[in-house]
Amino acid sequence: MDTTTQIFWLFILAVPIACISWTVTHEEVFREPREWCVNRSQNNKKFLNRKFFYLFTCEYCFSHYITLFFIFFCDFKLLITDWRGYFIAGFSLVFLANIYMSLFALLRQTIKKEKVEIEKMETDSNESKERP
Image 1 (tube, rainbow, N blue to C red):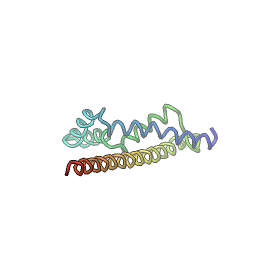
Image 2: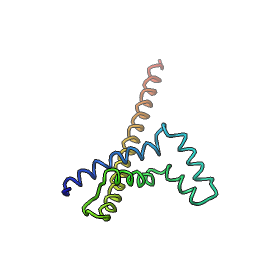
Image 3: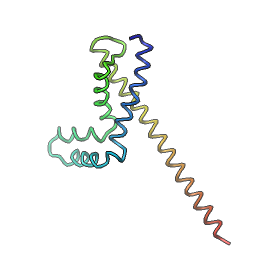
Image 4: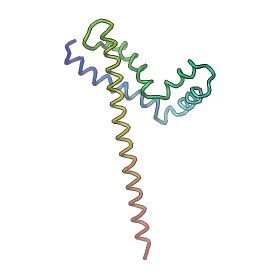
């Protein structure tokens, strides 16, 4: 695979990695299992068990494991065709997926802030209309 194609794959493969990592660690659909994992990661007596359950609550940590799955599922290597290509691809995908997730978090935060501001303006507008 030539370098241009590899770079294309890098940017595309980071999208489902970011999507899966974000969904599992933040969205409502996985709230109950995530809360259970948070409880286990904070209250388990064994160190390795706490760390294992923590990885389901942290998008950065979880993205490493999703990246490993995608690298081997797609047989994606970056720049070098032997095991080093897997290594480079892994950290590159994690880095890019986490940039995507950070941008998504900023976007969601901006949208939420705008909704709150709009609701406040509507409330202020309704209160001023009610006053004689």
